[in-house]
View 1: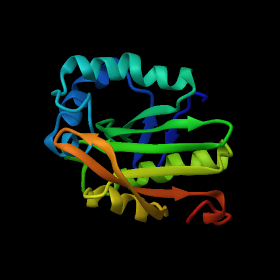
View 2: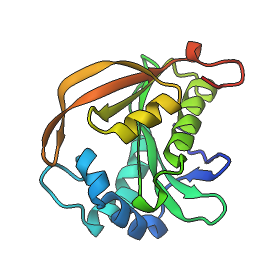
View 3: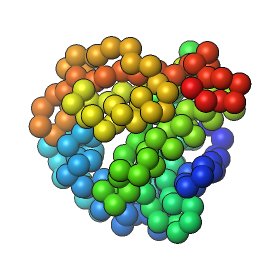
Amino acid sequence: MPSVVLRTERLVLRAHTGDDIDAVFRGAGDPGVQRWLPMPRPGKAYTRADAEDWCLVSAPHARVSGDGQQWAAVEAETGAYAGSVGLTRTMWRASSTEVGYWMGPWARGRGLATEAVVALSRWALLDRRFERVELKAAAGNTASRRVAAKAGFTYEGTERNAMPLHEGRADLAVYSLIPADLGRDGTA
């Protein structure tokens, strides 16, 4: 994928840098994030070294390997780090990818995740000409499921016992967005 910067009304989505390490460590290590995402892997605490690896190695590697692209979501007005959003598990032949995200506790409840997901999914469908963007959230993660609905994704069903979390396995609610879901102006 090309390295791009995306802008929304309140966010700039750009590549992670070394300046983001401390914010990624605070945000990704937050119990609210850790409850629903198996970062770095189930049963292991998120460390500053994990944040450093994410910002400097793993996130850049996702783009150059073709798996997807990861963006730092920063507030346009202040430059404050809000969270991480990205495309992953990209299947080029099928023109399909999956959007994932997390927001730090200081950025939640303001619609920033939805704004970022809308920007990424529309970019994938309209600019990159993907045919499908998936969003998967732990079935019990009502906040993430609200993001999917507000961003115009359609609920398709549940993948049972599909994701390892720190406290066992979880079912995943599966959502999708396809070009036919969008109007001419890119809205769902």
